[in-house]
Length: 522
Ligand code: RAM
Image 1 (cartoon, rainbow, N blue to C red):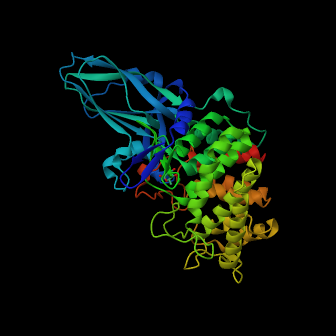
Image 2 (image 1 turned 90 degrees about the horizontal axis):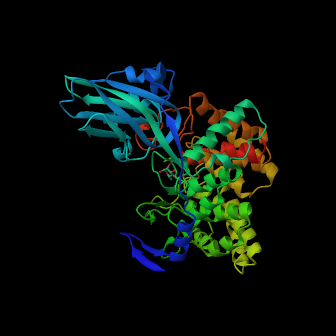
Image 3 (image 1 turned 30 degrees about the vertical axis):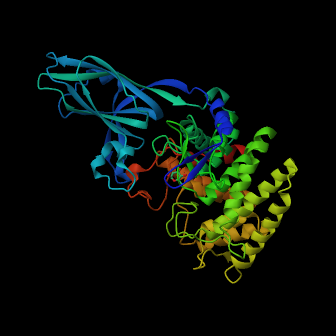
């Protein structure tokens, strides 16, 4: 053990765990993908963010496109890619008498290559916006970009050459990186064409987020978040089944807890794994649920035994946030995630997730024949009683949350996931909620995932399918070739960060249709 003090938190490094995580680090796999076509982005009110892409010429024409001062070209790679782009630059005209000054702009979505990033006024750092300026002193030149980019569209602007020469581009391609091995991809089930398309895009989303760890998004934040990991791992078992990567991620979190044993909500991976100083109780509980699923998928008793105390500490963390009545207490700081909805009161969701987690922990305690089982069972009884007594509104027949007794979709979903009502009543609850249509609704695929899971839990496959078709299918209709971080069908520019330019459009927590379709044979 080794104690390291971050600005706000003491980190307890478990070197043995970190060494295990390192041992499961594998070299990334590569593919070379060439740009597919020359395109333009045109304004279109019907298209998402107001821009659509139109083919201009096949890529074979690229060598004939001469670019001088102020000229630009947009290339479409035909699919979402993550990796290191390269190209050859050839001068045409007089000998180059001045450096070539280029700008590269990368877009997962058309809007990113259509609108200047100088328009960006969100609150996340603009350094996430993918653009790069290059001075090239010597031509011709084979240029490989040194940063990793995540995109489908690449815009190249010639800011300046000189009046005496222009430049032609050749061999524009990318060396992709991923830890998803396509050869290991399990065969997709025999299902409708539409569900196969959903599955394909989900698998692609997951593959592009599978890097040295399960990243949340290869464009942004490019790091390991526990909530995302929970859903990625589930989808991974049904698709690439890269168990070592899940194991690596679990050991990374377990190797970097704080002095109370809490796992951070996310980890930075380079130059070495570093926990962020953000502790979210729901994300901490997902450590236990991810471990539960990992054991279910692998029966790896050694890992379960080693990481079990870490999982228990996350339950203790949640327990500390309960009041005398065993109710989760809303905190005045960012204490739980649940969804990007500022108006959401998270009490009932966290209460439900704690119950859900306790049930899984008890099943693990049984496997391990652990003495902690009686403590966990006692806690389960108390938090379940509290949920039914204080959070159930018998007049409205809905669960309420927080001091204002807020009615949110999330609270109903999490109480269903918790199984506090018998299945039939839980199904009625979901139907009633759909009719009631709470003002506090879901904003992310992360939250919608649990809606689908809740419908499946109460045995309503049709309703689950409708969410997949209506929500993820809507993204598909809007042109998604990987699923997005944020999607509000009634507000297509929605972003919790103040600008949709910074949203991630290939986001881990959105990859779960493949999980549902494959696991539940939808
Ligand atoms: C954002 C990312 C990430 C998520 C956190 C809570 O930064 O979308 O995936 O887990 O929020």
